[in-house]
Length: 355
Ligand code: ADP
Ligand code: MG
Image (cartoon, rainbow, N blue to C red; front, side, top):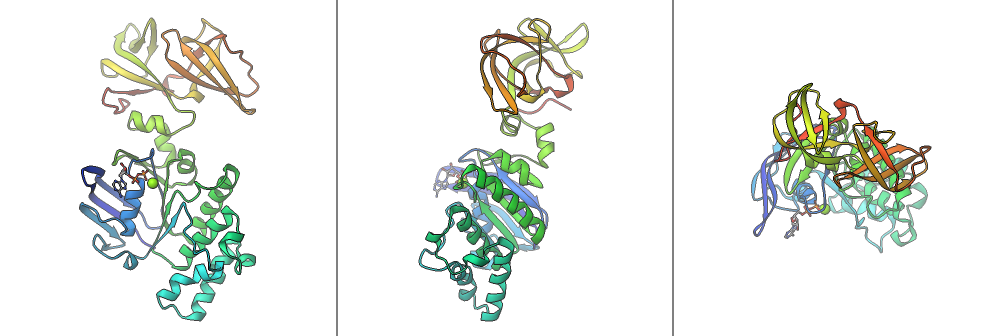
């Protein structure tokens, strides 16, 4: 197992800059998730660790060794892809043994490693089957098994669960978390799904247009997003944003939103800003009695919880998350309130204004 580090990594595909000055430290044994929207550079960064993609500038380290120009096969990494990439004509056992055969691992050792991986992944009864005779989840377990038997210094996963149905994805997510516990291995996991990032990661790296937007433990990103981008990306439904003017009022710092004055916990900068509030931090009150009113357009009842898609008098969208037992009819006007310390403020350039 090993640490991984990036120092000022740039990557260009012709004129397209896929990675921009990425510097990052991943600890030995850590489960790190790269998350961000499609095209933000997640796969490029992961492939750079594997050596599948030469970088344009900067350096990459695995353990204490700089591997920037080291061949992929000599980096001691194993990668698992969304597409499984199994050999269709080979049995599960042969798929898992193949890489070891190429690398000259002795027969007895090969068999022992396959047996151990099969035990960990509960594939023991499937070893003689071909990939076509397996379900999607079983195929992905084989692909993970093929990575385990390589005994890599670092595991690399590129959206490995994206081909699975929702229920199986949750189950495999839990299995991967358990696998990380069991192997105590360094794992880097790429996903566009913030729920996977929140649930699996020791540390999340949010990427935006090839740049590292924020790095931190899941709840730190949720509670203290450094930018509006992170605030909007982490958490579901997404944080609500309103354009406000910061000013000092009779009671101290406040945000002006139309006629509404929202008291702020501390003196913030003055001028235009974006105020953020999560759907789960809005509380329903009777119309006219909260900080602001909103008209509910659609009430989406999920059973345990209900999402109220509403608009303020100024026409801004606000999603409110309420308990599933709360019944609010579409078309009704509700009052909304919130605790001051749940508010987020962002400057025009997207940076958080919260100290
Ligand atoms: P993600 O995995 O986050 O969806 P990628 O790392 O695949 O994003 O891509 C990052 C950016 O680099 C995108 O703009 C993508 O179009 C571009 N890109 C990726 N691979 C290539 C390639 N082989 N040639 C040219 N551009 C590429
Ligand atoms: Mg990708």
